Image 1: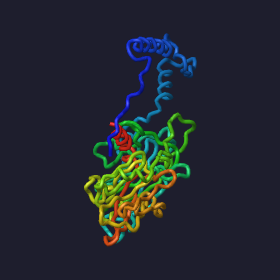
Image 2 (image 1 turned 90 degrees about the vertical axis):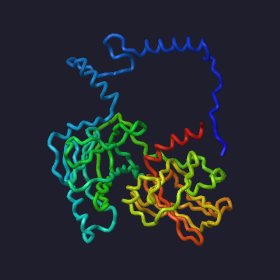
Image 3 (image 1 turned 120 degrees about the vertical axis):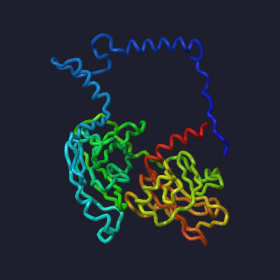
Image 4 (image 1 turned 45 degrees about the horizontal axis):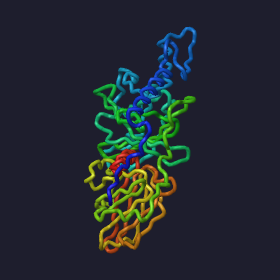
Length: 386
C-alpha cells in the first residue's frame, strides 16, 4: 500500500511580515475586548450578584458554572472505613451487596453455572452529587476487573472506561472507581449521566462474575455534555475493493475509517468471559482484538483455506443472535470472508468470530468494541497521513 503524505495548504495573504503585524494587532484588539477591566465581570459573562455576596462567592459561582468537572475527594467518604463485607458506597449512602456472597467460591457444588448472575438495582442518587464510588469487599477476596456499561434511551449498551482511584482508607479492602473523562487524558474524572447503568465485577478467587444495575437520578438542568451514545456510524465509506490493500500476512481485519489488519492465530473456542477479561497480553490465546469504529470485520486466510461459513456473535455484555450480513469468497478469493456491521455500527461489547474452513473445522477469534479501540482510532488515522 502506497504511503500517504500531507499536502501543504495554499499560501495565504497573511503570510510573511504583513501577516505577523496583522496578527499582533488582532491579538491586542481581542485582549482589549475580552479582558475584564476594573471590577466588572467583563462582556459576555452574566453572574448573579446578590447585594450581600462577596467577591469570593461570585468567583466560586462562576467556577462552578464554567468548570462542571467532578473532583474526587477521599474525605467525602468519612474517616471510618466500612466493614470488610460486600457493599457499595457513595458520599451519601451505603448499600449492602449480600447477594455477591450467596455462593461460596471454594465450593463448586454451590457455585452457579453461568458467568454472570443478575443482581439488585442500586440507586446512586442524583448525578450532580455523584463522583467516585467505593466497592467494599471481604479481606480474602479481590476485584480482578470492574466493567461499567451505560444504557442509552432505547439504544445498545455503551462501555464506560473507568479510572481506579486511591482508597480513602489505605488498609481497607475497597476499590474506588469513577468514569474516565471522554476525550481527555487518563488522569481526568468523567461525569455520571442520569440513567441506567450495569456494573460487572470479576471476583477472585473463583473467577466469579457478579452483576448489579445502577440508577443515577436527574437533578435538574445540567451544563455537562451528554455522552455520545451514537459514536459509531455505518456511513464510513467502506467498499470491497479496499480489501485488496490487505497484506497477505493479515489473517484478521476490520474496516471503518481505515483498514486495519492483524496477524492473529485463532484462539480456543472455550474461552469464558472471565478469561477474556483477564487476557491483557496480546499473546494470550483468549485476548480480544480491540477494534474501533467498524463497518465490517472478516478474515483473510492464506492459500489452501476455503471458508464455508462465517458468523459474528456478541457474547458480552448481552449475548445475542449472530450479526447478519455475512459473505464468503469475497472477490473470488476462497479464504476471504466478512460480516458487515448493522446500521449504526457494532455496539460496545465482546464478540466471537467463528469461521468454518473446509477440512479444518471451525476457527475462532475474539474481538472487543469499546474504549480501547476508540482510543487507538485517532492514532491509526494520524499514522496514515505521515
